[in-house]
Image (cartoon, rainbow, N blue to C red; front, side):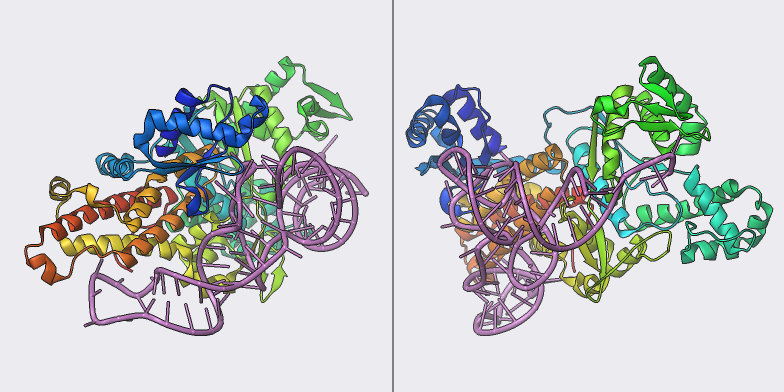
Length: 544
RNA sequence: GCUCUCGUAGUGAAAUGGAUAUCACGACAGGCUUCGAACCUGUUAUUGGGGGUUCGAAUCCCUCCGAGAGCGCCA
């Protein structure tokens, strides 16, 4: 990585102070390809003017390592700006062609060898919502990225297939079919009525066992969820963990209680059993077992953490919906007690559904909501995926389905895909095998502003991957895709790759060599698009 | 009432405390006899208001205004 190279120069040869060195890509070209503010940071420590320090660093860099740069400039108030030499970029191009599908992989610092990512995990009491889709795409891509960076990732969907929700679902079905009286907190969505009508005989059979009935219905809803998630949205899961089978029936509830007890963190009050989560920064202690002797959802989750740990995971990432943010501290407390090394919780913000400029309240209980399936049917999975990925998880989103439909053809995902299509179009047209191109071409010919800008953008791919992995933020890659596409479109607009037939025919060796060099460039671009789209989980079409 | 999150062009979003705030859509003005124009080139903002912290603030602190969420022995 070019960034790492600069960093190493700065660290080893120039700056001896223990200070974190930041290198970034400035927004404006006039400030170079890369830039650093170390001089500004050092000024206080060394009690010297930042400009003076910057000049000193520049001088040392020039005498030591000039070959990496074509220019180093000091700019007020104390930035040091770097211009990377063509040769370095050309070497990077060779690197891309050599590593192919492995280009961009990088070992991230503090890497966990085995990590579980739990996402969506919506209760199987009905179809998935838009917010579930948001977490779903995010989890899927985050998993891809971490896998690419060498983690062993397990993608988990935790299914709450027992407990109160399921019981309520069973009762709701009974109420729909007239076996019991309807209550306010019952599920009233069309899908419940539909299921109830279809399975009248079953609901009659289980009218005295609403939990079992709820579980039967939940199993059917889960099938639908799986279909939407895996087949249509192309979100992969490795494990569908059942609360009933994997946690309760494997007695993880007892096991986790034993641990709490051994650590003297539980007590009884008002007939209930409590965990001292306040010892771990929570606002108040939490109930594990209710007065009526039922284990809470929280206890089951603690059991789930223990189960995860016992299968060899020391790290876990959870992506939760906005209604869970008050829940974060207590589960982190539980994770800590159990001994999970790291529990990273990402809480996505709400997705508000708008229609004709007005908000539509979504609720599973009332059955009023747009399902995730509706969305990907209307706007196509690639567009829906990209739409969510370009939003950072902490922003509140307004989602207008009508508008989304209308605009789906203008989704930026097509902008990126079209760039890849253009790459492939040229390669198809010329029809030269990669090996021939590599032998005959001379990448040193790539030296126009457009060549260089494109190469620079390509060289940023590993940096984008690393940043996305470090910050658990897939959005960085989605934006990178647009940056790369823009740079390619620009290049394509201004530079001809295949010369007009006449000049090629007239023995113009120069022209041919330039073409071959450009073909190398395009092949490399395509490799990056392939890797990138693979990580983002979007298609690589060869025509549109 | 208490706690948390968010307020950025007409719209939707971006920006580990960095330089002249970025991108897309819309609108307006241009660009194909040549590798597909699903593209390219222009124009479009006192970052909700007011204070503070510092070399430097959309970002951190205080305050006000506005939006959303959480405050159960529910999940």
